[in-house]
Amino acid sequence: MKLRDMTELAVRNLREAILRNSLTTLGVAVGVASLVAMLSLGVGLQQLATSRLSKSGLFDSIFVTPKTNLRGPGAGPPATRAAAPKARPLNEEAREELTKLPNVIEVYPQIRFFTEVRFDGKPYATMVAGMPESSKASGSFDGMQGNFFSSTTADEAILQTEFAKELNAQTVSLIGKELVLRYAERQALAAQPGESNEGGGFSVVPQEKHLRIIGVVDTEPASGFGGFGSGRLLIPLLVAETLRAAQVNDLRDVLRGTSGDKPAYVSLTVRVKSPSLVDATEAKIKNMGFGAFSLLDASKSLRIFFSVFDLLLGIFGSLALAVATLGIVNTLVMAILERRREIGVLKALGAADSDVKQLFFVEAGVMGLAGGALGVFFGWLIGQALTLGTNIYLKRQDLPGVQISAVPWWLIGGAIGFAVLVSLMAGLYPASRAAKLNPVDALRYE
Image (cartoon, rainbow, N blue to C red; front, side, top):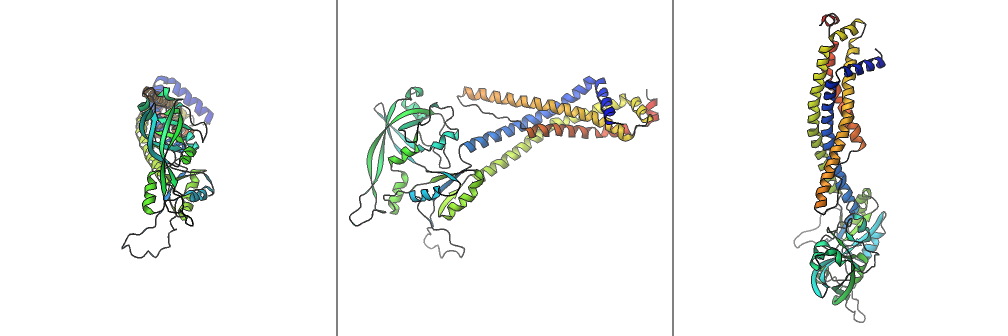
């Protein structure tokens, strides 16, 4: 039997019992819709997490810290393995050397210091953090009140919402006003004639800095691994560096006798061109005598979590599709009983058992294809409804909207193909049963 004749015959048979076949197809569509809706939720959440982490600069950053090779008393002789690179101070010289590494696009320190702010003549204690220019693209400042820093050297400040409310409950009214930053500047002690000040010490001098408030941000922004989550008053990083404000690590340097006119950094964040370059760059930094780590291992764990999450969602979503296969089996078995004489005529005219099987396979495949296409559409609608409801809730909480559902092309093709495959498997028993009918008995059937 030609494929064209078989297709025409299958379509005609489907039209004769259009209500029953439509309900069966709708059952397949409901099963596929549940599968697509659940998987789209898993894919959407994974894309949301990945995009937020990628924009924050966590995947392409390396956190560099000073490395110590100190050995405690009684530690015994060193191991026979190859000697580790000698520990080096993490100072400006080291920062310049890190900047010259291949594929490095940015190296910046973590500058945070606790100080006092005066606004409207009242003092407020807060933590100040320096923000690099690249933090603008991290997504933390999306939807903020006001604007980001106009330049890397502007005497401007962005307030975290909770701190802004301490200054004025109407946070919008703060934008454009001025505050005074009081801080302790670190100044190296003057060296005696003929002596070097290396490791000599420093003095702390009270200073003031006038800053104009240009924005209020809801969340506590993070930039790179160092993060500035505890910074409630944010200023440009270059401005923070020029202040030379005394930080917590300065006391550590004094106790170790390493303080001087070249202060060391607590940590440096090194950003590379691509996450794929992190491992190689991290190895080079460790060989230079510094401690280094990245979040790639954490991201791998995150991908494993979402893979298992998607698998579980797929299994639960497939349960409805499994129930729909029973409807296909029932529909085709009923069709055999109603079309026994038709099957007998086909066999009497020379149709082989394989032709009868293929006829029922085509009918099952058509129901699977139509149900799969409708199911993908319904699943997409469910995902959009979930996203809409989530965004309405977030808007009421004064939070930015998100896209929690995504239906990529591979999910569309996979869902339709899976529906057709399941439908063909459901048609195995009815097709075999129809092919085994005796033509003589089929023609006698009333």
